[in-house]
Every structure is written in C-alpha cells, then in structure tokens.
Image 1: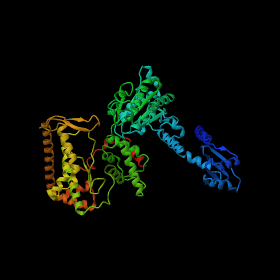
Image 2: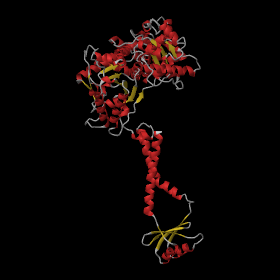
Image 3: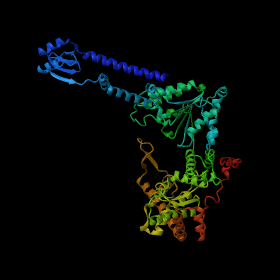
Image 4: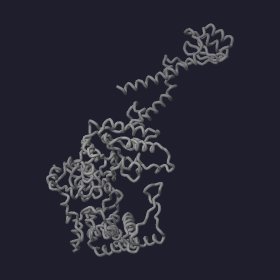
Length: 631
C-alpha cells in the first residue's frame, strides 16, 4: 500500500507541474477577444499584419504586435477574402477534432517526461532496483536480514576444516549463553576475519555459525557500501549497525570486505578523501561504537587479507583472524561425502580415489565436479553417477572440454602420442614420482594431449629429489620428440613443459637454496608500489644473477640429458605403447604398464590402484556411510 501511495503522490506532483506550466504559458500567450465588426474594420484600415484561420476561429497579429482573436459564421468566407485582398498573410490550419491541444501538450512535454523517466530509472538502479520508493533511500543498507528464516545450515554441513570448526565453537557458545562469559569478565571478539582462497567455504562457515547459534544473520557485501555519491556508503554502514542492534544478538556478515576495507592511500597515493575511505572510516567508528554485551559479532570474509587497512585488523575490531586452508586428502573425502548425499552413485564409485585425484581442489570445486558428473550421467541416460562420469568431470574442470572435432593429421597425432608417452615413462621410472593415472591424446582445452598423475597423499614440503623428479617428468615429452624424430623434429608442444621446468629450476636455485654453487640464498623480489603483487625487478648483483642463470641452465640441461637416456633405453616398449595409444586414444596406467612388462621392463612406481594406502581416510563408520551415500 505504501508503494502504491507513493506512486500516486509522484504522479500527482508531476501532473500539477504540467498543469501549472501550461496554465501560465497559456495566460502569457492568451489572445484578446475582439468582436467581428471591429476585426473587419481593422482589416480595412490595414492594421492586421498576419492571421491564422482554423475552422470558424481567426487568430491575428496586429501591426503593433498584439494578438487578437475572433469568430466567423459557418460558410462566411468574405472576411478571409477581404484579408487576402488587403495583403494580410493568411494561413489556414485544418481542424483537429478537438484533440490537437492534448497532442501539442504531450509533444511539448515529451522531452521533460523522458528525462524524468530516465532519472528515476537511474536512481532505482543505483539504489538496488527496489521500486520508485527506493530511488530516494540511498542511505539504507542493502543487507539481507534473516530473522524468521534463519540459516538452516549447521556445522554438520561443513566438512574438511575440523580445526576451524573447533575455533568458531567459542563464538557459537557466546551467542547461545553470553552470561557465562560475562561472569568471568571475558568478552568475545568483536570481529572475526575469515580469509582463504576462493571456494574454501568462508561464506558457508559464516552461515553455519548463525545456523548453529540460532540467531539472526545479517548478510551484506563490501561492494554494497560503495556508491558514486559521497556519503552514501557511510550512511549504509550506520544503517547496517542500527539494524543489527534492533535484532541483537545477531551476526553481521560482510562478504568480500576488501572492496571497502582496502588500505587507505593504496589507490589514491595523494591520500584523497574519496567515498570509499569515508565508508571505511565509518565502519571503523561503528565497530568501536558497539559493546560486545549487545551480542553483535561481525564476521567478514576475504581472499586478500594483505591489502586490508591495518586499522581494521587491530585488536578491538577484527581481533581474530582465522585462515581457512584448502582441504587435504582426508578433508576432500569428507567434503565429497557431504555433497554426494543427495546424489545417486553407482557401485564402482570410489570417493577415496576421487579425493586423491583432486589434489588442490576446494570445496566449491568438489561440489562442481559431482554436479558436472550428474549432468553427464543424465545426458547419457543413466540413473546413477558412475566413476567414468566423475573422471570425465575432473578432466573437464582441470583441462576443459574434449575437442574431438579438432582436425589433427596422422603425423601430428603420432608426435603427440610420443610426447605424452615420454612424460608417462619418466613418471613411471623416476623415483618418488606421483603414480601415473592415464595417458590421452584427445585434445582438451588448450592441450593437445595429457599425461595425468595422481598423488597418493598430499605433500606440504618437497625435497630436492621431489622437485628434480618433476623436472625430469616435464622434460620427458621433449626428450621423446628428439629421440624419435631427431633435433629437426622437435615441436612447439613442449612450450608449457619448458616454462614450468624453468620456473622450478629457478626456484630451486634462487629461492629455496638448493644449489651448492649459489648457496643458501633467497633472491629478494622488488614489487611495484603502484600495482601490488607484480614483481618488476630482482634485487641482485649482475654477478649473482649470472651464477643463478648458469645453475638453472645446468639443472635443466642435466635433466634433459637424463630423460633422453631413459627414453633411448626403453625405445622399443615406447613404440608399442604409442601404437596402442593411437588405437585407443586414451590408455590407463595399468594398460601402459602391461605393455612395458611384455618387454621385460620393471617399473619403479605403482599405478594409482596399487600400493595406495587410503585406509586413513576411512573412519569406523565409513562403510555404513558409504552405503547410505550410494543409496
């Protein structure tokens, strides 16, 4: 009703404005009514300069510039003829049936009405599109308040971050029973900053805290406070905290707080007093202004904590910072079980293998994989999600869609097969290398082929052998091209391999101190102060830089020669593998190893299904839970 009333008020105001404008315009342009005989006499005396005839009405302008008006009887053309004889400029206008004034009115007001409409639309857009009444409520916060409809998500729906869940239980206990903390003189943190890479579950955790504590959840985004009008963001911050005080105890959640909390002076080096800085200042004041006894806790999320203003992170504001890491292999297994509860899985699905195959994936990535697998299964007309669909979904997420329609000549396909076989043989022969999963020459994304390796377990630190082993595997593709096609036959397909190998070798020498010649030194990188995070120069002497370059070249050259020796040693088995690869386009590790064993080759590293101890991923109830997940 309020919206309808406001709309009617606005229409009434605009209508009154139009009426008043036209009323005064008509008064200013109103012609003097003159009797017909007086008008005829003025024509005879030559006092009429010009006239407009419209039906039975004549509007004329005298030689003195006065507008006069008269009416003539129907069928009387003598007056018009007399004006023409006297040299009066006569214009005849057709009769419009009485609607001409309305058309003229609309035509004269059309630009103004169009401008008003565009202005109101712009105001609605900037104020969130909430209708005409929102156009003048810039200072109102856009935060969504969940009071009656509190978040149904609890900590049971959050998996893979057990340590973080233990950390936030203190906040939940406080929201449930604040008196217990006040008795001993303790106060909870005013603000909690959740930071981590995108997709690790920051927003999900904040909603779970509110759902677990059964308190209102007020959700806003950092970008909601930043507008083109100065002072609007600060007003919205004030309104947000006023709303929180009315719904206390509650949780204020500000997502992507770096949009408003960026360090002051980082963008405007002159220290300008812009809108964003005013909004940040108001946020700092509001966080100082409320007492924790009111039961308000501010939770913010960001993936860029390094650019936040120090005043925002000091004790008394966001005085607790919680890092949410990417899940490890056990965490990924728990996350997969959570997301698989509402999906029908086939009996061949092994979530432990999926957890090992998705090293470095976040919770959002894992949910996306299972959803992609479900879509693939539905597209194929299946009732359940099989392991094949999950593996295809992993490939799609990691490498892109299959490009089966891509035209590749037989020679190019053979070159790709030898390149990938070179990677694969090095992966099987290099000690401590990740187990081989499969080899494919089907183009995906920007890659023409792929050799996939799955780690048995997550690694957090790597020794020199591990890194050198990775360089050897990367060099295997180029080494195979040279062995089978000669130096003139090497292709551009090793570009990415060489880039990654060079980066690893450089880090070994210049950052990790793994070179005996250069010694334990870390090269200092100088960042551009105008563009954060982008390195523009390296703070080293020319002599040291020369030594680093020589060591990097030495590592890469020795790895390349070693890879060529291995490829030369197993040249015949690789030919047989390539033949099979050209026939099937994709072969598993087991098929690869089977061909090698026919030639008496003993591999050093097991395939993904051999020797992989995943028992640590399973708890006592895992088998029962597995049956429940699979329905």
